[in-house]
Figure 1 (cartoon, rainbow, N blue to C red):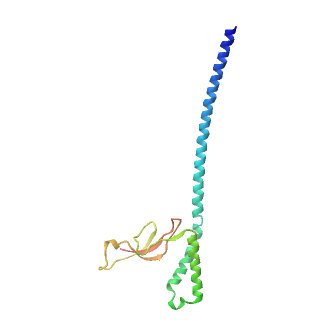
Figure 2: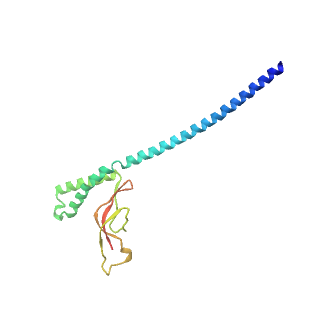
Figure 3: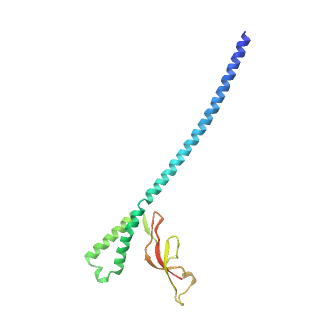
Length: 170
């Protein structure tokens, strides 16, 4: 009878060991699955924070685009202003408003695109016209050089906001 009891206990122990091994295997699978899900979630969270950061960086671009024509008009008025008016206090006050707009744009990470004297870059310039060089000044390296800026271009946080409208040499 003792041999039967010992054989029965051996079977119970073997069954318990089998169950334990199966439970450990399931535990390892669940742990691996949880770790992968956690890593995926952390990656998603990081990517989403990047997207939100980019959105916030460029969220005011539409607002800035609406301000740029006002600045353009100030600059045009300053350009055609006769010399005898430049010392007038009222005109100085208006030009201070222009400077305030420029300071505001700088605080929003808006920068002017350099144009005159630069080579044409289709990523930041838009050609409005081409001007031929005279025979004595015609050089191949001058071809495609910006000679006049019709409208300033701007970037915001390094991304193109508005291309500069320019005239280039043929």
